[in-house]
Length: 202
Image (cartoon, rainbow, N blue to C red; front, side, top):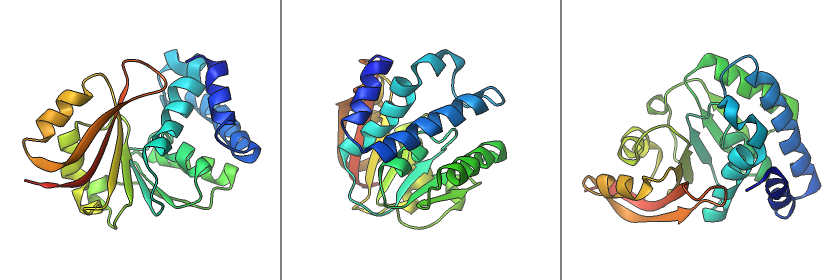
C-alpha cells in the first residue's frame, strides 16, 4: 500500500474532521520521533500505510462499543488512531514515562476526551475491556496471561501480528480455548491480525 492509497483508504472511511486529526497526529508523531525512538526511522516515509491504516483497520474486525484497551501503547499506535476514529472510550496502558508524557501531549493537543492513560504495566490495571489490542507486545499466550483479568467471555481480542500469527494461535491453544481466526492485513502481505473471543484457560 502506497502513501496515496493509504490516505485514500482513510478518506473513504471517515469524515474530514477525523481525517484532519489523524493528519495532526502524524505531524506530532514525526516531530517527536526526532527526540525519542517511537517508530522505526525506516517507516517515517510510509507512516500513513505502516502506522495509521495499520492501526485503523483493526476497527474492521469488530467494535462492539464500550472500552477499547490498548496494551503497550508506545507512540499511540493503535490506541490514538482508534480514539480519533471512534467515540467510545479508549484506555492506553504504557509503562514508560516518556511515552505516556507524549501520549498525554497528543490527547491535549487533539482534544481527545475519550482517552485515559496509565503509566503502568497492564497487570497493575483493572476493569473489563470490550476490546483488547496490543501491537508488538508479546506472544498471544503472553498477552492472554498478562491481560486476562481485563477480559471476560464477551471480550474481543484484535491483535496485529506478523507472518507467524497462525503458529502463535496453535501455541496458545495448548493453554487457552476460545474462538480464534487469522485475518490478512490490508497494508502488507506478510502482516496478519489475530481475532479471538470467548478466550479462557483450558
